[in-house]
Amino acid sequence: MELAYYSDYAVRLVNSEDPARGKDALTSVEAVRDLFGGSQEAARRATDADVTRFRSVRARLRSVFEAANDGDESTAVNLLNALLLEFPVSPQISGHDVRDDDGRPLWHMHLADHPSNATAGYAAIAAMGLAFHLTEYGVDRLGLCEAAPCRNAYLDTSTNRSRRYCSDRCATRANVAAYRARKRLEADRSASTGRTADSAQRSLANGER
Image 1: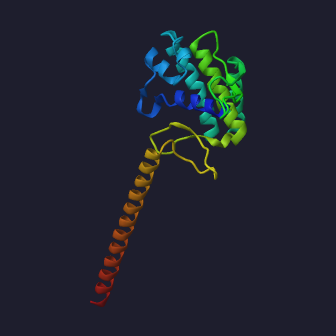
Image 2: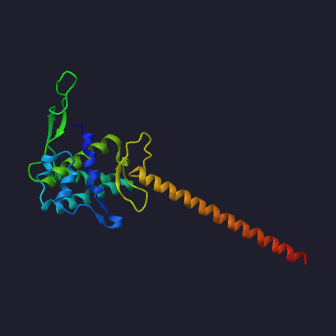
């Protein structure tokens, strides 16, 4: 399993909340377990106490994305470093689940599950994955969706650093809104031009009397 895979852990957790709409999907231990995806062994360790702990980690991860989105690289790095110190990872070399054509293991780095509790394990993986993405691609590759009111987090992997939205759906919604705004502006300008022309004609007519 490549380290890049783990960066999505942070995005999944941050996007379990929609602050602008007052929505929170992280309301039960089942919701916590769903965040682990295929890591079912780690998910089974989650308890009701992890709901509150996960929310706390989520707020700290969102702060990293907010700082990066605002261009405050130092703050983003400091916040992420604090998470890395509090939730250290346990890297291991693994090859049990990936083999080449000859059946030989393809050795790769794997982050072992944290033994203490589900929150510590998830936070360690999420922070390490995000740190890998940040150092590999740049702080400016961590962003928040610009399609208001959505503020979902995303990781920009585009070749030209052009990503601005968390999903194709939000991109389409923003483009449609921008198109309608342009049309309204054009209509307002046209109406204003028409009123100006009518006023000029009336003034000219009054002057000829």
